[in-house]
Length: 139
Image (cartoon, rainbow, N blue to C red; front, top):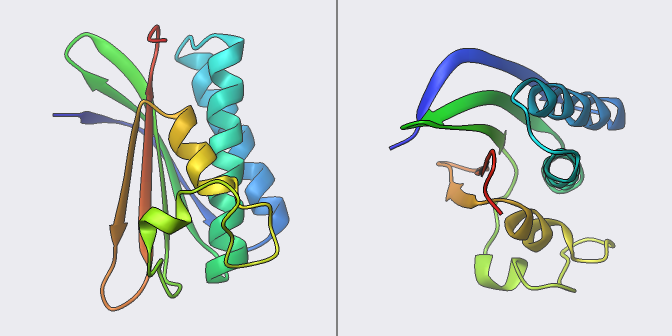
């Protein structure tokens, strides 16, 4: 079980500037939580890819950045939610090189590889929620 604490922030993702804002928020949280520079970069990269996906494939969405705990572990959780068409074939979408747009097809699978925990949940009647967690001090 993962516990969220009151330390969290919400962001609209409606423009490229919002993607940068989410990336910076993730970096700030990661620094405050004591993540290494490498892990900060991993989290920022995942945040950029997921926020950009919400913007490009769903016309925008919302992001929540929060500190989480599990026992004595501290981590960062990023949740991206949109109201777009969703992903008809998740397995295919996670493969490198597959893109429903004109991208390189590395975003969703790349974000999964950069996280310790990765969840994708379809929303009804439409949309998608993607949650990534990374725990401080874990390889």
